[in-house]
Image 1 (cartoon, rainbow, N blue to C red):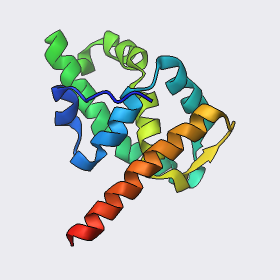
Image 2 (cartoon, one colour):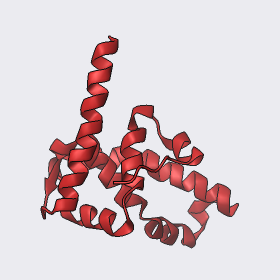
Image 3 (cartoon, rainbow, N blue to C red):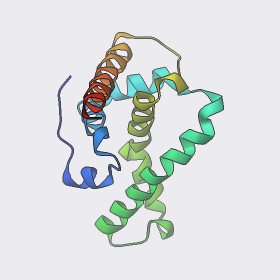
Length: 136
């Protein structure tokens, strides 16, 4: 999997710098791989409310950047909804949520690419926990 450094705009949107490796893994996925993983996982129903609540800041950030780039209020523009869907940001967020909370995800279709994604993101989280435990 290729590592792609987040852009400055993406770094501003990341609320916890420890998320950068996970975001970079997601950015490194091809559109086909990201869609394959997205289609093969689902948020467990009991976590749907938490998922929606944690997605709100991502949507707000997307609205902000969209408004800045288009010089108009996204709430007043029908193009915003299309641009949000076309951006596939919802795919990226579900993958991010899945990487951060694998216990809240159900695998609908197991495939090699999805398995590799979880192995790689779990590695980052394990390394992060190891480093944090040595700092304390």
